[in-house]
Image 1 (cartoon, rainbow, N blue to C red):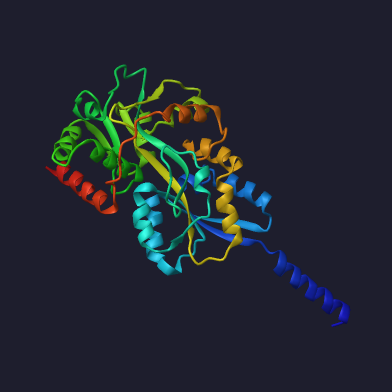
Image 2: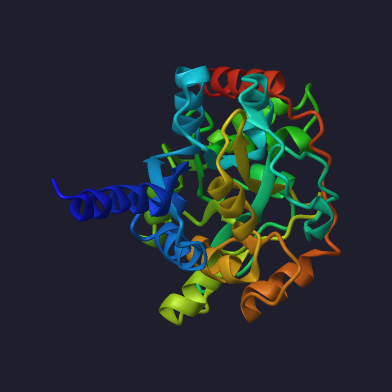
Length: 331
């Protein structure tokens, strides 16, 4: 081999090594990483800003499946970033000891409450609500207690054993009903519950087919119908007891020296990324910026809402509450 050819071959190998993109392995759930989610557009936008970085998603069908994979892999966790765990899972995820602080400036967040957890930082949030069709239901319930009591309403919600939404509903019920009331409340609700579905997609689809009067979802759902379908007949309940929120977060896996992962986490909280995520996921932005007029207006209107205290929603309590739900429905 000539000296010139040897030099060019060595230079080529050196260049390939230097300029090869650094991969960021992101574990996420389908609402973010699927073909119809915001993940693809976020990846493209991020890689345009950081051409030395490459995002690779591993997508799980539900956040509970995502959490189970994290527990299974333990210290061999392949992810650099985990995106999509929600607040009822933070305690269990933290107990794994696999996460470190994200580096996100928490003071820049714009949320219904002051955020203090540096390990799990919300990139979006939504207020729990029941969705109904105004053309079919003219007198929606004005409180959760009324929803439970009214036998004329056919209700759909998600199974808390398989759905993060279902767990959210269990937390909401236990935030409103005392321990000595909750079993009776579940039994009363069961008398006019049409479906307890495996997940949100299944239950919301049943509602849109005309099954049931109200379905458990987020207060943002009517915006989807308005913007995507030009339908304005859907509305979200506002209950007198107060609001409860679901937060979906970004988390950084400890022990990974990956500058691109740090850049990706910071990018998620930019207006550019949030303008992709908010309308795609039909949730509210976690930062203070103009994202989309309909979502911005809803977020502003909810700022004065009464918020329920969910501090009792520990991992152990949620498991006990689900057991109580199961026992009540079995009676």
